[in-house]
Length: 295
Image 1 (tube, rainbow, N blue to C red):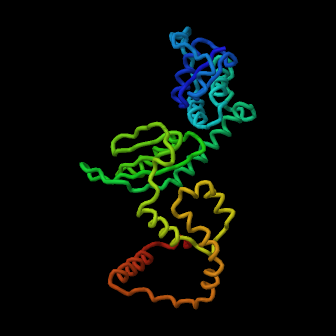
Image 2 (cartoon, rainbow, N blue to C red; image 1 turned 90 degrees about the vertical axis):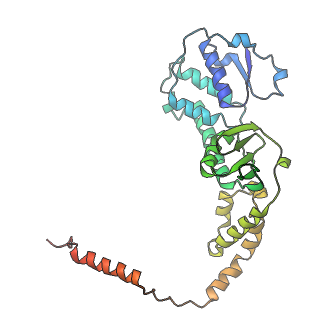
């Protein structure tokens, strides 16, 4: 039995799996671990044994690499062994069509993990809240920090969204697993940090609360649907969450007030030269366009 201890990253697993596959090491002969605290409990593989592949590399379906990259972000400790087993079956196991078999237990489990990772990425995109911490003295660029607690190790998969959307500011997203940093030119990653490393509150929080209060529609409150889209476990890090209870409690009164408010008369359309020119052009277009219903 070989014990392979890796960093909990897809790239580390891929490198180790490539060497094991080249040496034709079957999945049942490998024990995977990715926790540095667990490594002393096992006899770690000697680097010399992991080097020098003994056979030519094999071809791996590109679809599997996409599947593996996503499944590797899940926190289930079984993922490394299952990924290597599926890799073995796809290549040396002569099951080239394995990925098209959703009833296979291994494939179904990997797909379930990918779905969970996808949901977590979606929540991170929706619930990250940046807080202004400083301005760079040389560039004048504002610097923001956000704290987020994902269920899985999704930082590397989720942060390209923020790189594209917030390219004009410097930011860091801190999580317990890993942190992402963008300085306007380069995205890089560091080890995870505790919650105490992130700022608590700034002036942006009041802007968030003002915005949330203005878009809250008391006539369309559906508490179960709202909690499904915004689970309570994220509320502790959302500045607008402190308003939710009061807004829900007062929704019936606000709706009643809306019903009792007298309907406002419709204002007449403005009559200026610009609108008159548009109206003339519209009439002119109608006069020259043939009626499609006429022969």
